[in-house]
Image 1 (cartoon, one colour):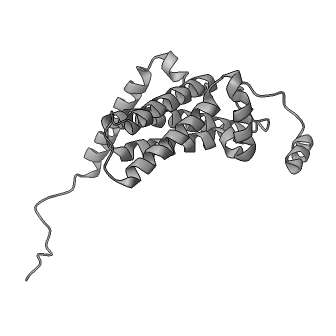
Image 2 (image 1 turned 90 degrees about the horizontal axis):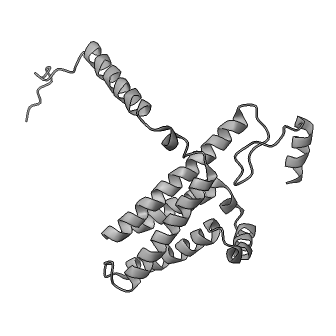
Image 3 (image 1 turned 30 degrees about the horizontal axis):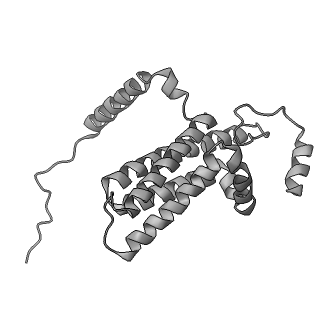
Length: 200
């Protein structure tokens, strides 16, 4: 068996053609970014939109889990698929408890956040949505995949809010934002902030 170590006839593109191709890709990306309406650009940082997307995601996952349990959406014929469906149902109820703005759910929401504090932050809720997305995708049925896409969108919105808040904290704004608040609090002295952080 012999191996040909000489150069093959297939040549890699030179640097100028690669730079022209990347410049064209940047130009297309800028054109796409310029054509996005201002209303769509305002969506990611809005906690109310993320809350509504979370409610839609929780509702879609609840309905798909219930329809899967009753046989309307096809589940695989394994015990793991049925267990995953039960987990999806429980996490959908948890999402609705956290995201629904109902007075009846306020006591349950406080109890959940008291026990699992990470669910009070956008990063924790994003993780919850992404876990639900993976559970829905694992079922393989069209209804579950559509519900998983809503969870993916809600998770991305929560991650965007988390990123925007953390970047605001890094840019010498040491006030931070409370969940559901879109404007920073009046700035406090650094000493008061250090004392508050030590007490927490």
